[in-house]
Length: 106
Image 1: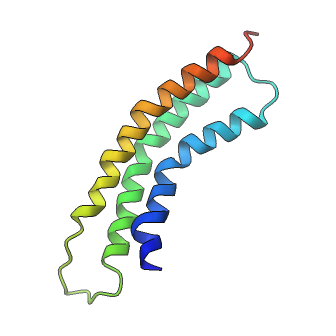
Image 2: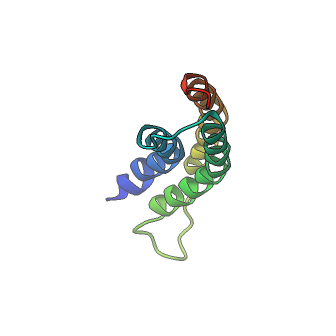
């Protein structure tokens, strides 16, 4: 259970905006380039907050099963900030451009 809160759930939280964007792209049949670009911008905005949530979830998992007055080093949880922003700021614009160019212009 502790591993779920430290690694698995934060990794899913970091990837969730891009997964949601791809799901929206696959499910919506009436897509235009404008809709894809707006969805990409919204994904980028949501992706700016998801690394913070993942960091807090991981820090909670690290401090799980500890006494409230016991100090715990949760520096490792901050790696989700770095990798989350790296994924958001690199993958989302590239994904948006690829999907916008592959969508028919209407």
